[in-house]
Amino acid sequence: MTQLYQTFARMGEAIPYAVIALVARFAGAIDFWRSGQSKLAGGEIFGVKWQFWNVIEKKFFLFENVYGIPAPIAPAMTYLAAIGEFFLPLMLVFGLMSRAGALGLLLMTAFIQFYVYPEELLKLNGNWSVHLLWTAPLLLVLARGPGAISFDAILGRKY
Image (cartoon, rainbow, N blue to C red; front, side, top):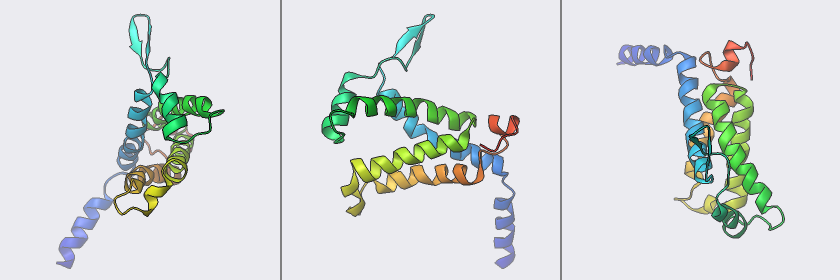
């Protein structure tokens, strides 16, 4: 049995970090990308529809009235979230300034958990478990970098 487990362990260790990092970058980016796209009304450039021109009006209401962001800064926070959820996932997916992208999304995750939904930490079925799923791949990229399948690697950077 020990021999079988050692063989299994060697097979797992043979997975290149570049592949693990690529999967982690996508895993860390996808929920934020989807959230960001839900905030945007879109627009057209050269006949192609793009989703980054206008923030949907109801998102301003959500930030102020549901998420509890104080009225004077709620519009700015709404725009910042939309911008962050657009660019930071792209940075991760393409592996360009990946560690900065991962840090930005980790900070957004912490803000969501500790400011917007702090009461969820005390619930057994709270959203904290989802935030852990976001945090794990982002921490991996922050700690170990984007791997060889990235623009950072091509450019010889350790971002």
